[in-house]
Amino acid sequence: MNARPTIPGYTYGGAAVPSAPISLDEFELLKKTVLFTDDDVKALQQSKAVVQGQVEAILDVWYGFVGSNPHLLQTFTRLSDAQPDMDYLGAVRKRFSQWILDTASGQYDQAWLDYQFEIGRRHHRTGKNATDHVAAVPHIPFRYIPALLYPVTATLRPFLAKQGHSQAEVGAMHQAWIKSVLLQVILWSHPYVKEGDY
Ligand code: HEM
Image (tube, rainbow, N blue to C red):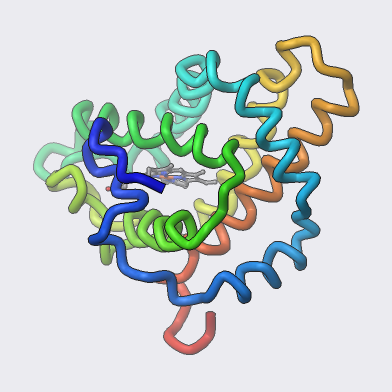
């Protein structure tokens, strides 16, 4: 997987991303635990063609949700005046849009696994704000991260249904997305878990 120099800070595949603290074999066991199979990879890849042209519309819905919930929007606010940092929101949105496509690619190899732990750090005080060099709220409380899985995946479903696929195909793509986001949220949780307990 190559680095994506066109998206500032999206260092997926870059040499500077530390290795994941779990192995690919351990990740396989995690996949097995959430019933994530090769059929899910196929369903995700089918979803890629569906979401590709709708990325901005999907992000409008997700950003709309965050923006209309002050307790979530708060994490994008500046420490100096408690106002949302629009440049920060915009920079993260670009990485979010690539994340949609990378999630749908279903190529969950070592570079992908390593980058998931980087995304985890970027939500946690150990890495938040550093990518965009912002002086924003320093940390995202853990409890909201698994909670956001539901609105993110529930609001995705109508977009998956927009290109004439059967109900069964839409259902399979949706389930695959839920499982993938669940896996990622579990990987991102690492810095929040007490040393030795992960
Ligand atoms: C299922 C849950 C979530 C998903 C799928 C998600 C997705 C993402 C993605 C893809 C990025 C960009 C990662 C990158 O730098 O490449 C990001 C960053 C960010 N997210 Fe989340 N996120 C979730 C939960 C949350 C929650 C609950 C909040 C706030 C309450 C939040 C606030 C942020 C912020 C502030 C950043 C920028 C972090 C930085 O400084 O680099 N996220 N998120």
